[in-house]
Image (tube, rainbow, N blue to C red; front, side, top):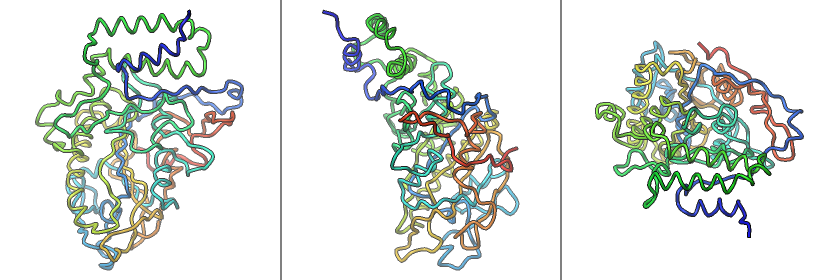
Amino acid sequence: MQRDPLASRREFLQLGLLGGVSIGLGGWPRAARAQQKVYATREGPARQVIQLFLPGGLAHQDSFDPKPHAPLEYRGETEAIPTAVDGLLFSRQLEQTAQVADRLTVCRAMTHDEAAHERGVHNVFTGYRPSPALVYPSMGSVVAHLLGGRGSLPPYVCIPSLPTTYAGPGYLSSSFAPFSVGGDPGARNFKVRDLDLPAGVDADRFARRRELLARVNAPFRERQRADAVGAMDAFYDQAYELLDSPEARAAFDLSKEPDKVRDAYGRDAAGQRLLLARRLAEAGVRWTTVTYGGWDHHDAIFPALRQQLPPLDRAFAALIRDLDERGLLASTLVLVTSEFGRTPRVNRTGGRDHWPKVFSTVLAGGGVKRGFVLGASDATASEPEEGALTVEDWATTIYNQVGIVADTELLAPGDRPVELVKDGKVRRELLA
């Protein structure tokens, strides 16, 4: 009796060799491809992207856009300090970042109108406002799909894990989902999941299993190579390469970093997560998303920021210096994102609430200007005063820098072509 090849694949997963990773069987309909707007991709100035996501909503007026002359009920306890750029002020808790401001671009008039966390998060990960009819793919997954990986490395990695479903592949196949490291690099016992063979499986046994699975599934692949099998094959190929590649395993190994470098970043969650991101960018991972902290400070915001900002400040400044000294900053686009800002006025419990009308985002490297400020908020950090930056323009500019035309269409369910970003434009004033 002939065995079902798909059942063999399921049994292979149950061996524990590749546990913890989901597999998608979805494929693209072929009929609608001729109707898509498709453009050639290129290798843009940003060969790698490191996205630092600060969930919850970082207060712009208590970080990158302080208002020292605003009334006390607006400026709160934040003290502003000068930076390496004349006239540019940061919060006192960003002292080291202030020293590398001449290598940053600060956008002080980012704006949208989604005040709920999940809706704001969807915006900054996909470039789209949420829709009840469609889950859009994250920019990292789009990059993975259109540009693919380099060598044996995954094209898209999340540290420490997938921060939200909106950071995933959306309507694309799950073969374009990120590889999650599955643990905190700042922990003493940190270990990247799925990079080691399970107990009792040595290299020879692993090779035999791989060869056996290939033989069992060969007829199945020949009959149904398109669509469903393509996603599964891509998953297995990537998993095999990670397990079988010393170079890929080394990229994830923080122990190879000198103690001096690890100390410069900080031996904590912020420092070691960003250090791992630098290692991955250096090795060739196209898109790495690092999630750090919780910034939803409705109460007692100033004591919280005094605790949370300094580790982030040290780690982020170290990342920028390290990339620059290694000659990697020009080819690595660094993004600091949060789903929105915080209310201009401090509330009755000493916190700030959700505020998407204006907030700050930071870019560095990857072909953007150095020591530049785009836009401004008004005197109380309530609304854009000039140079408003929409999420659509921001996302379109990022795609441009990695070598993708944002007007490109992908096929959503129902054979419907959907643009990567709708109605966005490249903000040329940001580019070097």
